[in-house]
Length: 239
Image (cartoon, rainbow, N blue to C red):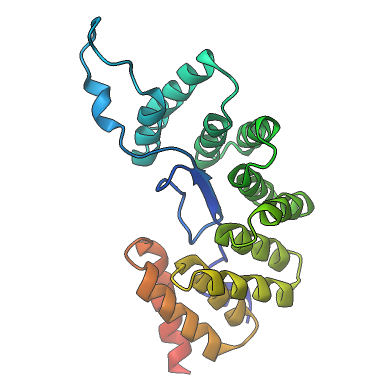
């Protein structure tokens, strides 16, 4: 079957360097860094006794709720203090990537890696940026670096599978996705992408199995994708 016949394009996963601010696991997987408990400090009163603003926490909060301008302002304040935070550059890269500015995102991920060469999340995110820009060789190289340091990184396994799929290496893509499922059987994005690969290869039975698993695990988090999956699943089951 062609890709048009499946539920949709296989999607990669960016990883944010904070615990819960990833861009969504049914897409290329990016990763942000930091804690998530920062919103309350935005309203701290000014004055000598007021706590210092938590710019990093505020940036994460604004990024999580989709307030690009305020998130960008907080990250810039952090960089004015110090340009040496790999986490800030990684998260800023995700902010640019979400706005579609892949060149600016790439520069920020590269800066994060220059500061911290073994920063797995930044390598993953740089791989995603290259993947989205169609630079498949560079994407594969970054994702393999991430997997050397963290062989069980599910997002990097999924993203490398997408690179292999784009290069026509379907067997390798399937093997990587199977590894991802073995590491985390509850990872909705792995099941979705396995379903797409099976669907495009004409393996309706396997596609149905993984589409159903995706719906069980990921329908709430990815409602728009779930609608397309249900439509495709109904077509497959009707045959």
